[in-house]
Image (cartoon, rainbow, N blue to C red; front, side, top):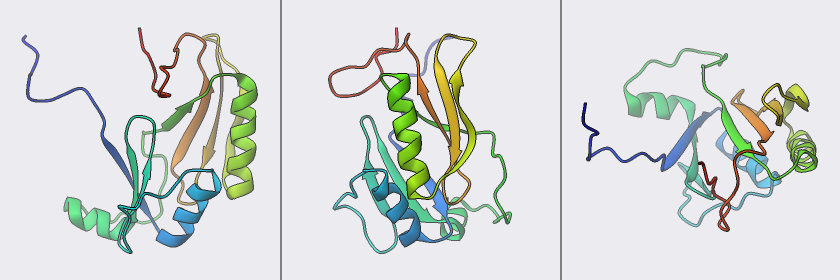
Length: 147
């Protein structure tokens, strides 16, 4: 099978459906993330090391995708992750998330694969992992440099 040349291996934008746009934007700002000037009253954008994070009202996002709104969120089979340079930075990031209103789902612990990881939910139940993976180095720009 030949590789498709018209489908680049990258994730440019992750858009989260949120129940209260302003409240969610304030949560991510409390993490230290900077709102992009591209934001508008309808969608809020945050620049990340490799991509962008968008916050959009959940019902409007479902309508845009042409799917029904299913009610209260539950585990969606997806996690978002922030890899950090040390276990201490994982702990510090989790403290920042909790101070901003996040709920700890799993406190950070040493993992069977040699790293350190824990999980929290944001204000709308989106599941985030904070991890230190000693086998995944970073570039100078803060991107993962996967082998």
